[in-house]
Length: 73
Image (cartoon, rainbow, N blue to C red; front, top):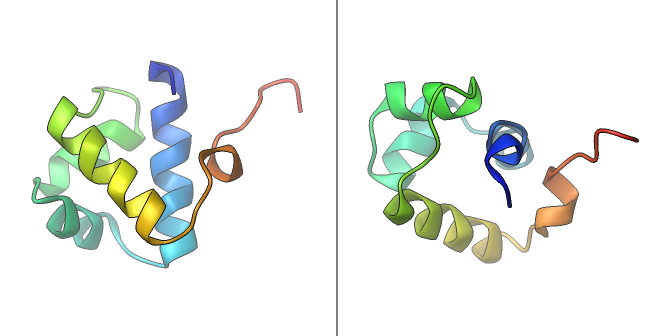
């Protein structure tokens, strides 16, 4: 996933899991502002957060292609 995909992927992951930014932050063991900044495209998740995000995708049987948008679609 490239840098510009993270905001949409994280937003859609939360929607699919029906959780808030705070709940996702708790699951990833990061702060609420971190998740907010990722979703707004201000920062990219750290390597550790990316690994934890990947685990969440896998645990919930969510394919990355389900949550990343192709801008041409």
